[in-house]
Length: 310
Image 1 (cartoon, rainbow, N blue to C red):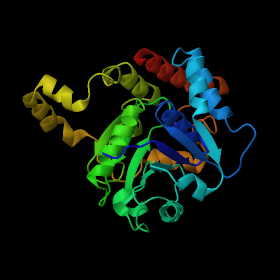
Image 2: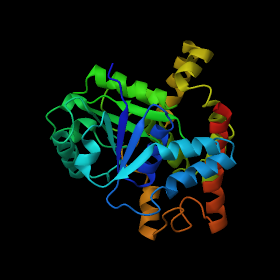
Image 3: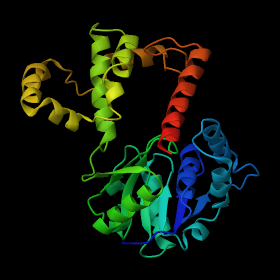
Image 4: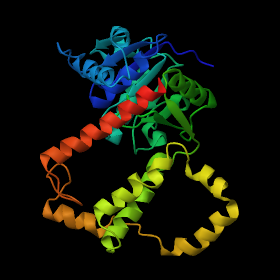
């Protein structure tokens, strides 16, 4: 299996900084973060992430110093790619931008370099279209916040080699992540397909007056959501039994949402300019204090889970 020592992250935005932090948590890796401009405070977003983790018991000052010391910044793409073993892009979600980036990277890196895309929705197969060595391109979708959520979806394109899949999975495990192997390049990969199947039903229930938005959220947070970290749907089906799973689906599936277009409620809110947290109103109304509490609560929950796993 390919030994990965030098990792390059393209893009120093929120996800790029988080990914650099993740890879630099592995003492065996050198990490380069490619940015368009070398700012004096370029390390601050990473240090801020780590300071919050330290306050929550999920990291130490010594770990912070070690992680920061393993990250270097460059502006020149060729310099970044020249001796890279693994390059992951956090470029804008624009297909042509990603295709052109990988084509350029292929021209200034080694033949065995692995190219990973952090796209959350775009096809790795399509992203690799302009590459000669399409078998070296793989999807590696980190979930936001990338330094706190363990899941990374490793997506096999129509061309990705098993060697590249194995090397990518092993690299992510070595950095403390929980990579999952997505065998087919399908829209939404694995986790987003599951998430948006749930959202479709949630939106439908509000649309039909079955429950209000807060009630739908409570049903998830205080019911099955408590089990999900320990019990996924496949294991749960085996636990309750295949016969019961069949019987329940034979009865209920015909009653679930089956729309193939976005909920009419979403269109109505867009037309009124109700954009969620951004405007203080979406499915529900939100004060600035409530928005801050939601964002802070999520971060504190994830940090507590990270600390528990240390």
